[in-house]
Image (cartoon, rainbow, N blue to C red; front, side):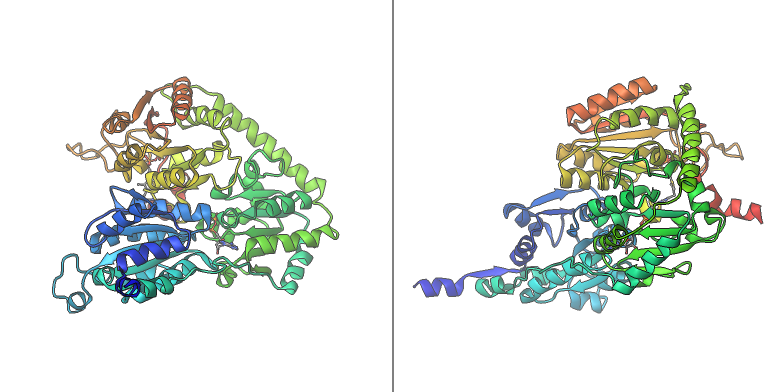
Length: 569
Ligand code: ADP
Ligand code: TPW
């Protein structure tokens, strides 16, 4: 009798997907339901996972990506087929570009109909569409392969250089049934998903030899260094070597921005003057002027630590590549300097300190102004002073001027607390990252958003309110993209391409969903509103009225605009 019952116990694709995720300690899915995955979301919740439902898949994907960055575990985004998948694909591509581990799981329509292009509901060849934008793409066709398929997706997302993985789940797979015992046995727990990768000893020696002859060394920390969670070794290497360092935007807080060796306030000077630069998890892409040109001034040699061998020599020749995981590479360098290293000369550190003092004094004077209407600086000064008292708070930041000014004015004190437009300079990460960060950390989030940037994901305020997340969104409202003063040269009825509705009240948007809105026009009001918002632990939005003339076109990227490039020729 017992044997008979056991023999008929069955499972199906839906259950196996959830079982396989849980078997690998994945406890949260970010997504948006519909055919064929609604029951998958329901089941996830019924089985004790968290399902966070969004209003648009791109933001669910961004939440998954940032969760992956914060935890080294792949964030999961679940979508329906074709349009839902495509909405999620932007986030997948952004995750791959930024080296964040995530898995986009999309339901898909019937293969035989899709492949013959017979016009199925939401028909699309999703697997091939995903391939160019993902680190890896897989489809599972048989229920007994779900265990291995999910294991493969997890390992692909987090091992080596992390990235976005696409996993295609055809509707018929989810409905397939399988003997429960066979199903259980088919699950795979990924062993050592992020293995250490030790650098070769001769590579370490080459790097140390170069570092030891450097006269004006500089360490550059990128978000790969923050991702690696090798915080103590990185700090020890910086402090014991005495080498000044520069954090890239998302590496801010890896060491507190107030650290004596931070050269952020003398950025242009150190980039131009350094003779040996140690890149730790930072690519020499556009954000670093490709490692050449005026920004980099005097000739220099690079030591580059990266897990991806093909990153080396991508833009300029690298004198000493160090391939391995950042923790292992940095601890090897640390051991090397502990057996003999002369700290950089007073001449070098003194020159940096002098520049820093000069620039910080200048910045303090700019920040001290109290213009009316409020500008980016005075608003950010108020925010900076409140955030100083809460170093545990996550900061999300996007926009043009809002991004550029906040990055330099808001100090970070703890690692992996700052999430921004990143490698693509993408707008639209705001609410997705904010939700992902709040859900993952259980701590408050302050999202500092240009009004244009906010618009890309603004509807997710409802998601924030629905899950009662402690997210305070600050909209820097200057009536448009970059600023609000452009005019239509024809004098016609349409406003200029960069201009929005004047004096919009974004605070009223959150009130529609039961959140708390604030409308502020002075730094004093900003301070009070932000303090209250954080203390409340509730979903809040501060509509901050910023001088509509204050912004510059493309913030600090004006030089990348084709018209300004052409003007220089
Ligand atoms: P940033 O934008 O802050 O300059 P990038 O995203 O350009 O940083 O660079 C991150 C780099 O870090 C990538 O080249 C990636 O391969 C590397 N990376 C990510 N994780 C690790 C790790 N655990 N160990 C070594 N390198 C890593
Ligand atoms: C997906 C182009 C770069 S910055 C920006 C846009 C539209 C908005 C700037 O205005 P905002 O900020 O947010 O009001 P501020 O402080 O200057 O007033 N679409 C995508 N990504 C990008 N980067 C753009 C468009 C862009």
